[in-house]
Image (tube, rainbow, N blue to C red):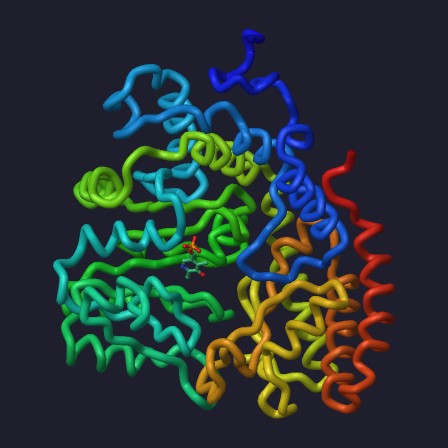
Length: 432
Ligand SMILES: *Cc1c(COP(=O)(O)O)cnc(C)c1O
């Protein structure tokens, strides 16, 4: 038996590449690389990470099991895990200008769950933005744990301008006295009045959480207001505008809350940490600390605005009329189009986005009357405002086609696909 058989009689366990040992999985990976190379990525909850982030994420750190926090681990051999987690924490604190960070949450939803665990007992009230107004599942949606185990009440947006109805938030807080007030959303494109929501939280002695999942990268790049000092706690995913691995961080300036947050993440909610993901977060934060990231963040915002302006020029409605974040929401109701049909056509032409409910949408969540777009990933590819303007035109060509001549849509899709091919070839990703 060869010495490197991994104990299972497999030849070259520690050295044989995936392509040799598992062709169907390798084929899907290769196809995914090609798919990403050939697609204009406009899904707001995605980005493209650096080779450095990929290297950290796909490393031998995946072998390491640790529980607890640096210097207080339950397993031996934690030397590098400790160093990496300390580095990630220090960098996160510097980036967001706050005193404490927990870099262990496996996802944005789990980061928010840790805050729920810290702040509430089952049955307590929470106040968040309604899912159908642009909030997130983990902010009290009926189908989510946050809506099942807690008394979730919500605020929405105003019919006339699509902006958060702060008066409704204030009324809901007074009526239900939530222990936690949550700001942030999945498809809300505007700056949130953190000070006003903090005032509302204070009026009922609630904690105030800002979930900046989508705009966290803009905050560190100086292109969006920082939730601190208004937030007691802030969470952000690391894989959207922050351009890092899948996962999240929790931030606070309050030492007592920080201790309770650490206990809420481990052992409250999670077991062992994902050391490879923590290393990749450290790399991502290191990248975000460089001056170039400010340029990137400003470009994301300019590109999102260019895309919104292109749709508006072509007669399509943008919820709130524009954006202050990496994302925008197109309302298709006036044109009688469905989000699912539109997204499928865009996908066939090489544009990735997602169908999304618009505020006061009459369609089901699997049909919808909207499309959500994000500029973070396309900006990483190297597209500028002129490109996003062109991308908006191409998407509008498809929407026009679906509206006026749906039986001939395949012809439009082929023309758009050719133009998308030119764009993606001009800005290649992951050479080699
Ligand atoms: C994307 C998003 C999350 C993400 O959570 P995951 O569990 O990592 O998918 C959380 N909150 C908001 C507001 C989001 O937009």
